[in-house]
Length: 411
Image (cartoon, rainbow, N blue to C red; front, side, top):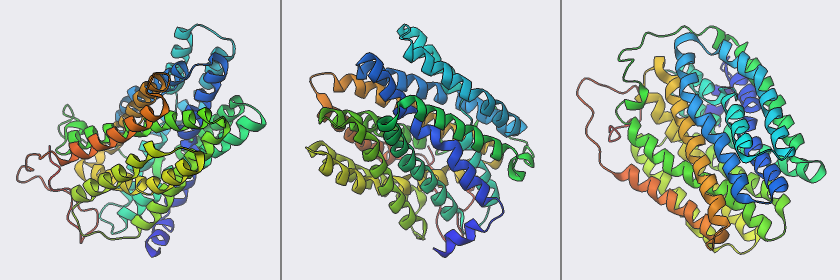
């Protein structure tokens, strides 16, 4: 735990962790609240899943554009503008749902709302890359970042569950908007963001997405996030099938709580394996955690399995972020992390949309859980595909001095 204290004492850490936590809350609250709100008004998980998928795909589409802007001009103006408009775009989305407008209107509102979400996660991770350059605590910093994300997915769904029972999903969406705006404004006014000086990038046309190692990392991440998106709809559908729809937020929170515990354990370690091998072993652990979910037959069993399986998620994301930080230069870090955001939102959105259809088909909820497990197997398989060696003269910056880094991932 000494490493976590060292990270916390860094001048930028409290802002990155606390404001980052607040700014990320919409990631866990809005999709679930939107899913429940649309299902309440339409009675269809297929339409609800489509709305959530459209919202996520919109975030995915705009994130790399915003990331490149932030790398070239700084993130301050971008954060302030999106912080101002995001609540109004969410209000418009809620209005389209409650008024029962045509499907195309609902989907268009989802696109606008997704486009307006502040670019918090990628901005925070890019700052972590800069402030931990050459530091032995970089893995601990990324572990804390991953744990912060998982706490978002503990607190967010739990708050949504409480607000749905006491009031309605609309209140949950409103709270998410307020937290997002607060976090984005605090980050925008921080010295770490305002003091950013753009770095001249070499090979600008190529972009970080084509850096050696990134294509395979993105592909495996796509499969993994598709599977997690399946669970974001499959778990609520499981709870609904058993007559306890309000338990969906609790189940997702339990899943994320397991991830928090796994992340705390992993972040305090110094693995001697190359990051590429750590990533493969982490994905293997995810597969082991996903496969038993199809056997669950009640809420208690599913909750226990989600908790155990969740312990593998934060370690996997920690290694994934560490890989990104060493595969791309600092001048392209925000854009690189936004591509991971694109993968996370885009693939999980497609997974959520596909699962909504599967749930209402003859495969039912069991088919949705099986689809999530198969996606995790695909993620592991992609990571095992051999890649070409890194060209000579292209070194990789170390994450921490004594550990080998990223060899074998060049693609």
